[in-house]
Length: 139
Image (tube, rainbow, N blue to C red; front, side, top):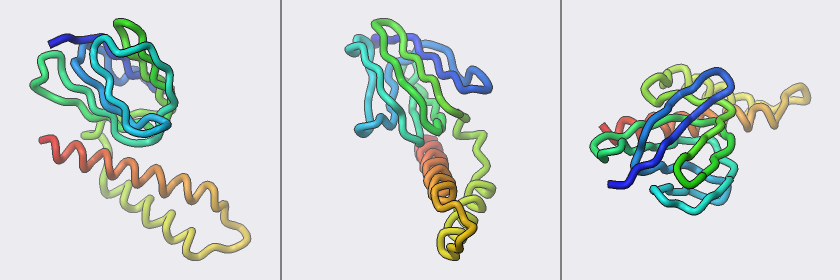
């Protein structure tokens, strides 16, 4: 199986470096799959799960990215994420609480609430929960 180098970097740390056979991410225009030999490309990423199949195809790593840029070059794919976290490191209870807080803030809108911030928090918590589900379904 053909492979390529992948590097996932957030503002805080390098999340992943290694050879993979496939990458699936939420691109600006929808879900995108990358295989070895993919045409060079740069696209914005939406918040959500990103899946990387190992070089031999036997395992899969799931990473949550909050957005960023994906760049495909002939032999390497680089993901520069605003923030990124391995799916198994996400705290489902904490994320569910953040979702409830955002939903409550939107339901009880008043003049002093920042609607954009509440909507952003809600979207991020939903994307994180989706990442957890993809991680659990893969196991």
